[in-house]
Length: 587
Image 1 (tube, one colour):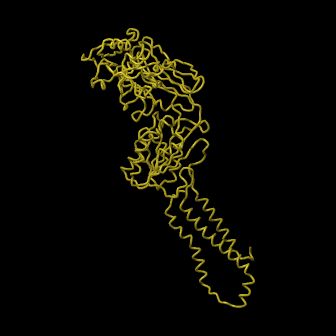
Image 2: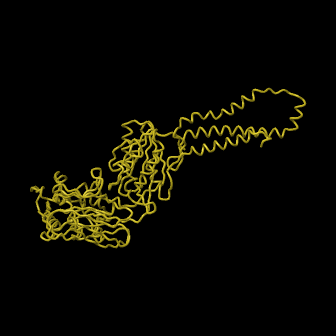
Image 3: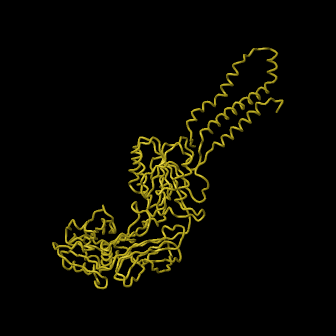
C-alpha cells in the first residue's frame, strides 16, 4: 500500500488517546471494601464479566475509529501496479515509453493501440502523485529527457507520438541512470511501459549486467515498475530485404508475414501493381519483377498491405538507383584464381550491366568507380575497409587441414541467403581442406562443423576462411559475389534505404536534390516473440521491480485511492461505539 501523504502516519500514536483517557478515568475512583457490597458483587460476578467485555469492545471501537481517520487522511493507494508498497510518493518518476512500431498494435476488443493504452495508464498513475512528484519522460526513439509539469500533457508531447523505430530497452534504462547521476535525485522510480518484444528487450545482452552494477552504485534507492502490455488482433506485415536493378527491370525481394491470401500493392511514383500472395506458413519470401520501361533515372516506390491491427507494418518504402554499370575489381596473385573470381563477379556483362577488372597485386585500383573489390593476394591494403563499396577477402594460400564441411550459415539475409523461392544455396556441399582461422570479434555469417568461422563480416568488409577454388562449381560463389556487387553499387545511385532512428522516427521517402532516401522500421519489429515475466524480472537482477501484465481484459485504473473505505470504516466504528455506550434500558 502506498500513501500520498505519508507524514500523517506519524500521528498514529494519537489512536492510543482513548486508552489513555480510559486509564485516567479509572484513577479517579478508590475501591473501599464493604461487606454488604462484597456479597452483592460475588452474586453478580457473571454480569460484571459481560460489562468488562463491553468496555473492551467500546475501547477497541474508539481506537479503531481514530486509526481509520488517520489512515484516510494519509490517502492510501492500492492496485496491481502502484499498490502494496508501504512508502510515500517518490521525489521523481521517470516515465519510460516504448515507442517502437510494434507498440502500434491495436487490440481487437478495445480498438486502442498499445502505445495509447500505455499513455492512458501512465497518466492515470501520475495524476495521483501530482503536486508531490516530478515527472520526466524518456522515449525509446530519441532517449532525450523531457520534464513535464502535468500528466495531462503526456499525450501531447512529440516524444510520446507514434514512430517506426525499434526500441533498445537496455539503452533506455541507461539514459534514465545518466539523468539520475547528473541531477542527484533522492528518491526515484522508473515506470517502464513496453510490449516486452524480445528483439527490443534483448534479455541476454551484457549491458543488463552493467546497468545493474550502475544502479547498485547509486547513493539513492531506485525502484522499477514495469507495465507489460499485450494485445490480440489479426495482423500482417511486409518488408523488403533487397532492391536490385538490372537495366529496365527492378527486382524486389519481399517478406510477408501473416496467414492466407493477402493482396500486395506495389507502387512506383503513382503507377501501381497488384499481386495476390498466399502465405501458407507464418512467413513468405518471394521476388517480384517490375518493368521500368524506358526509365533510366533513379526513383522510389512503396509496397502496401490492406489495413489490419497494426497499420505501421503495412507499408515499406524503397528507393532504386539509376541505370548504371557496376564494376568489380579482382586482385589475385594467381591467374587461374583471378579468372575464376572475374567470371563469378560478371558472368554476363552485357546482359546484367556489369564488368569485372582483373588486376595483379601492386596495380592501382580505381576506387572511385568500383562497387566491389575481391582480394585474393595476401595482406590487403588499409583502404579496402574505407573506400565505400563492399570488399571480400580470400586467403591467397592456406594450410592443409582435415576436410571440414560448412554446416551452419545465415539463410535470412547476407551473401549466403536463400534464393527468392526459398531454396537454400548448396552451402553444406562445401568441403574445405585448406582454411585460415578467422577472428570471432565480427559478425559470423557461416561456420564449419567444428564451429570455426567460414565467413565473417565487419561493416562492408567480408572475410572468407577458404580458398576460392574450394567454393565448388560456382553455385555458391556466383550468387555470393553478385549480391555483394549489388550492395556495393548502392554508393553510386544517390539512393539510400535506411531504418528509422532518432534522426527520422517515421517511415517515408525524403528527396533532397538528386539524393533519395527511403526510411522504414527495422525488420525486427515484425518479430512477434515476447520475453516472459520470469525472464524480464531476471534482467533487473537485485534491483527491486514490480511487474503488471496489462491486456484488454484488465479493466480500470492501475491503482485507486482507498480513503473513502477508511472513512466508511470510521463511521461504522463510531456507530458501534454509540450502541455499546448506550444504557441497557435504552437498547
